[in-house]
Length: 334
Image 1 (cartoon, one colour):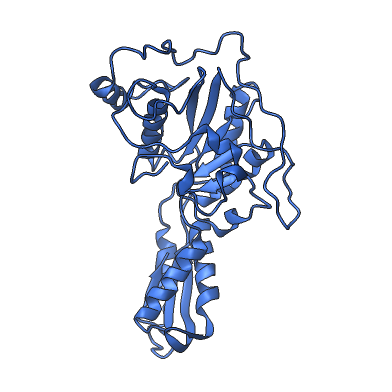
Image 2 (cartoon, rainbow, N blue to C red; image 1 turned 90 degrees about the vertical axis):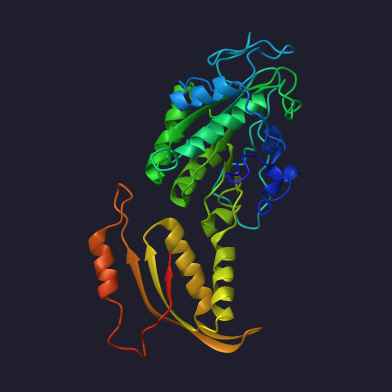
């Protein structure tokens, strides 16, 4: 799910292996943008603005080559939720894995594929809207937009739950969806936005062999395939961002910086990666130089995701402005 392009492309996930490494990606092959189809999100009443989008732009008649399915319809003579496929082995790793050896869930035919979306709906509501939009377009086989994605009567059913930007909330949301569906896990998971929520949900979804794709989580540890064999993402890891920051700073010949970061998984991880690359003696294309961290401080984020003002005051008051030799005019905000 690429917010800037309104599309989902499994081949944009360059850091997680090939399609053969993750068979569950066969659920959603490469797609592109087109006119929106009729919404068919199951078990969730669409909001007014979503309903208006559908009514303004969707075809009024259902596709002629497939019966129109109501939001809660289940396949005839099929169980309430599609069964999981037979277990296979996850991608090989040099390190022992804490995860079970079950593989991604098998893609069913002639029945429903259930996808769970975990989004920070409090602060990222457009992610939920984009998810609804994309799922509806994939289900519509008569709009001229990738109509051959789903065949043999296969149909997507999806739901969205709030993962906030919190690991505990994400874990509870995943388990609530599983409980609501007779303890059967989804075939695929899309989310989360924040790394802490993705790490938590990946731990439990991995136990179920559920492939998870995040559009925004950048924590370096999520690249560890021995720990997260079924996790993928459409953004680069923090380790690449750190290298870019170092290259940018050296382009200005800076060698001394201060760091102000928040106490989130994303900021803490990026700060740690940057400091490991920055500090010490170096001899590279920018010359021989020694990197220094003049000052660093972690700013607290409250439970409601607002910035703790007292923490900001402490951070600013701690800057060594009375000691120019040990201070820095360059401040990296993460």
